[in-house]
Image (cartoon, rainbow, N blue to C red; front, side, top):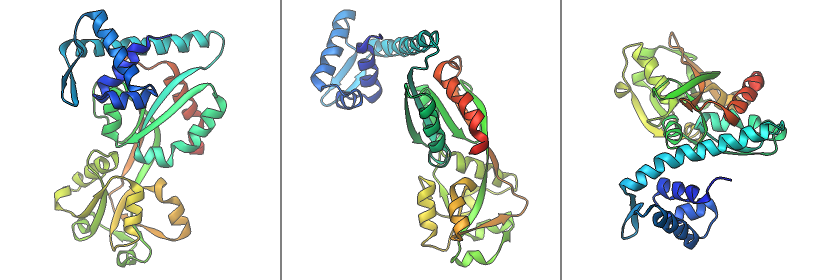
Length: 298
């Protein structure tokens, strides 16, 4: 029911590209251009500045983007509530999750959710925690799941699941000799860690600070963008990684990795749902309730 031209405009504005909007919406590029021209003719103003192959929003474009986000969110909520009158769960739900959650927690939950609500169009993007929060603020997703601390005041964080970070080494590594180290041993151990902006690194840094240690004082061989990359790296080097216990369960059972306890330095954290303040209803709430009922199986 919503005005498709607003969806087209929003996609072009977010991607700053007619080509990417065409790919995202499965519409030809000439059709994308036509919709934008119709909006510009209707409002009698340019919405984009064009400089060669690059485009940017004009002041008019920024204003239309601000209102189109609200309008399209309202349309989505309207569709959801109208179908709910007939006990039908129909609509679109765009999820975003930090890498650990997307890879090791969500897949079985998504499968069960789709089985129960087959008429919900569900999609998932993943990135680090800060990237998920940015996607929420840019209205690219409806609901996020992130690791660790509460960062932004305009977002609402709701606890979902407990997790623990552990230090792991490959069984054949020279570092696998000891079952326990102290925090003071860490500067002397080569490490591989998640990248800046990840919830995993944030939690590790906070744990270090409680022992008056800084990340800059450690021997970090490599920062990598995913836990899977860290696990593969550990297979080929005498190095220690800091990862979620959930991510190495199979390797621990198979005897390929070992956990090395860091004495007196627990690294507990929570996985949290995150939403824009004031937009806590609809299918996002349905998914949160569903996940809450099923978390004991995760």
